[in-house]
Image (tube, rainbow, N blue to C red):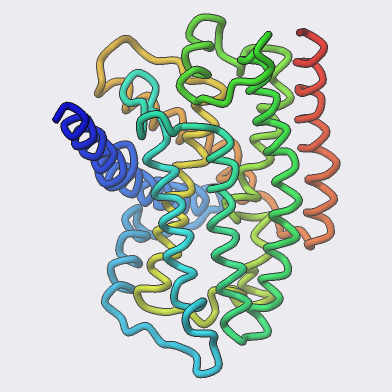
Length: 326
């Protein structure tokens, strides 16, 4: 009887985390708001009026009510399942994400290695979408997405290892996000630790690549390959890709906040939720909004070379410094 009760409690908490907070409605709402603010600020920086802040929500609602067209030559099972794959992966990531001072996320599952694998699902979904659409533009987008993903995965893995080794100490590595937050509460934020600053800079470079914004929007380049993998999508299927993008923004920004500067402001839940959102917003401004407002688009070979030279080198520096300080 006790085991049944414990299981039901765990299931209820898991569903709440997945559907309401920190994932679900909270992450979706914040992600859509950030997309609107990002587009508005970028327009102002370029001396344009820009769309209203709620434009991403309007787009998603309009797409949800439109008919989804299916190419005759597409591989239907793969083509139709691709949007759901990325969305489900990001929904799980959002549920796993701890909010410092507020929520520990999905119980006993918030592990950085799980994050490392799940964060690749939106890119995998785009590759499946491109390869199954039978469009030459989709195939080209698939090739570019695969190349870019391999490039930015390398510094991300080294960043995760540097953080895990720094927290683990004598135990070599600690991958629990909750333990990483607690370690920084006792020993100071990693963003202010000279050993971890190169890893933080590498993470800033990682963000625009994984979020698919200029200068790393190569797989979907509208002026070159007409959205690439997304060209043949419409209606609710395209809306799911947009929802996935909104969720992924919060997931990768929140992940950066948790592993580098999870400090809280007292014990008030509302204040800490707002503080978490503000930190994510500042991270977005620095890493993507300001950058894409002032840059063009890289070629795929330039992007690949960039990630292997600069972010990978920075992450390696932190990894080596952590190892030398054992």
